[in-house]
Image (tube, rainbow, N blue to C red):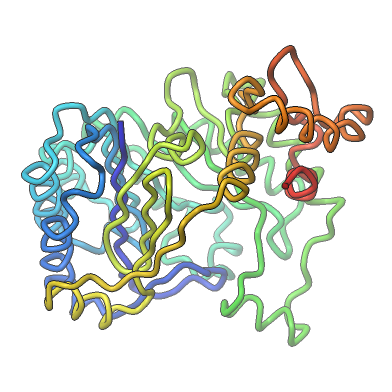
Length: 370
């Protein structure tokens, strides 16, 4: 099985924290869609015949495309790869782009999952983040999706926002649960290179939330969502039973995927390649029939480190039996101090992070690399 990711870089305006490649040049959308369809033809052999299980439109803001434009790309994927094995077709949307007619049109194209960047239900914090929607619009968007036949709705929430209190985040979690969504992705605010937020921090105009409060928010989130019946199946992801993101799970499982569009990454089990994070360079290279991309061939050490990193992000953890005896021995020697502190748990042939260690997972995981 394989996945396909389609990067849609267009945004009406950039959020203050965003570190992803995006552009406000929406006048190039039609040309970009044509380039995506052409790229499908040029790279039709990349997945080596593996059936496509998931298709994911991310961004940027995919909902800045018309439903017809998204339908055009879906049709091109179907013509090139076939979608008989497709289980999940996700489109990321901004709440203020959601209308009944728009979502109904997406459903006719086969979309069965919507992922919405809500971030918070606090209007003051939404304005600070330069989000275009209000809390009321976000809740209305969830209702519209549900009424239009989307039974799998995910929302993003952020915590650790400047000026955000523990009670504010508790309110966000309760509002999300009352809205009836099936999946929640929640991330601690990070200060990304090149983002306006990092610049404000460096100028002393924004004071980051201290680590202690961020940890309290993370703990509150884990407890609240668990009590509401959500599975904490990956560090930043929670779902009701059966509603995990199949596309994102494929990244963590090492499943091959084809990334289409500017700045999109692809992986085929032996190498990783990515297109330029430049709209003009991407479109021109595709129109000329020679896709521009960089490629990294993954060494055995790279593959081991990625397996450790991705597996330990999940609730399932790392299956030690998938490693050679030498790698098992080396890994367990590195893991022993964390096992003794209760931060890593060895359960027969599985190694996983304890929930209390998830908040500091990066430092633990990196200590296990070869």
